[in-house]
Length: 189
Image (cartoon, rainbow, N blue to C red):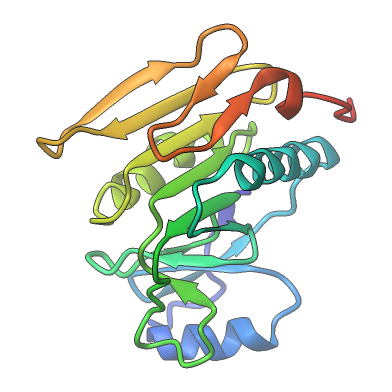
């Protein structure tokens, strides 16, 4: 999903954003006082994201909770709030203290974005720069529209290593397995 420019130069607080988002029929992201409208996804994108979520849920470690794209993630260090396609928290869920409704988490261990023509630049660029600032995040996974899985994994030194899944899929360090035959099964054209 991609974001469009805000409709007014008004700088919103996170509380104002949450109030507007609660009453909105469409999702928005938030950063630096701007409320950014999200574009809708394709049927293929939606089905692929669902397959990813099911695959992670079916192979996740005990004590981990998997969320789909309705769960907002906020990067405490930068204030940016986003809706990743899939996220996973292991252990207690930390909600953003500014969100009394508990619709925003701050401690994902794993984030997955399904790439599309309209989101790939942001998923690889600005979003990724923000996600790296989440202390709990151990893996960031990009899933292509065609069979391709890219993984960014935090090392013990705090740097990030990159690799692409081999033929067949990948077992993530955070526990779940992403199998090409499961992720790309029965997708619409």
